[in-house]
Image (cartoon, rainbow, N blue to C red; front, side, top):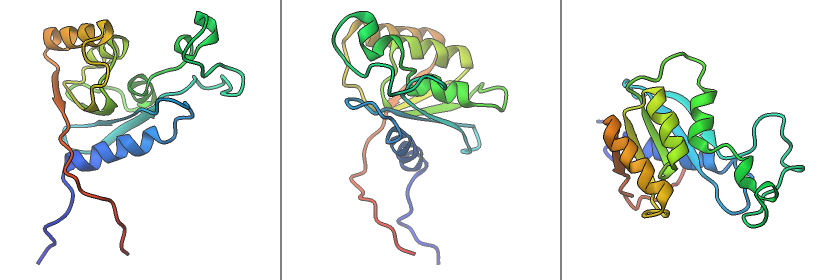
Length: 159
């Protein structure tokens, strides 16, 4: 008889997104993303960080200061990285699992890539202009947004 306490697809893919976010070197916010095809196969992952070739030792991680003295002009978000990391062609109809609700810029990339569903863990910037704009665009483009409901399960490994 098979075991019955295995994790759901949503738990699995949110877990992959969380694990991906742990690769981020951002001292304040670590965000991960996992793009999944219709057949529940992982197509790509990403996390927030500087573009390839831009040293995280030379570019700023600050949140406050002049525009070029903060991370905001330089960091690529997890969703954009996951989309750009995909080498298989088309993402039409895919789902993206993210640890933080996408900003308006990532919403544009998600919509343009043809991703049709966003499953997110946190919506900590709810009500901000970027958040409102993202939700407006998702609704207009027919992208379904669902907040992940944590199961309360803890991770333990047995081999």
